[in-house]
Image (cartoon, rainbow, N blue to C red; front, side, top):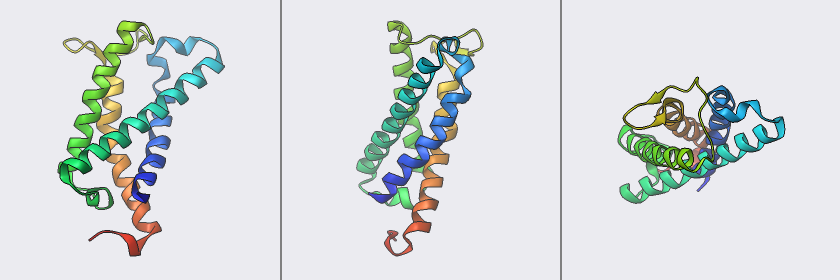
Length: 147
């Protein structure tokens, strides 16, 4: 469970920064600072939930959490794929409902109808989050790392 806590921490830090950096790609970046902070925090917490739920799903599929402490390509690839698929679905749903909208700066994938930045976020940050969490976990608890 401690490795999941590290995953939450690294996910929060990485995704939180990404959310702020991609602000110009969303229309809400021209609203009040209070609203922008709320949306970025809300989205970051959502990203952490996606990351953790996806990690638990991958652990169930592989019937082990060992891959979190000693990352391997297969589980990380599956984790990333799950997160990207969910994000694409979520983006389409939220765009259709008007919960958010893209600015003219957002590159949109035409056949998918969603922005490139949120998908790129998961493609880059998912593997990085897992590898960083594993490194922090191993550094904090050498005796508890599964073999």
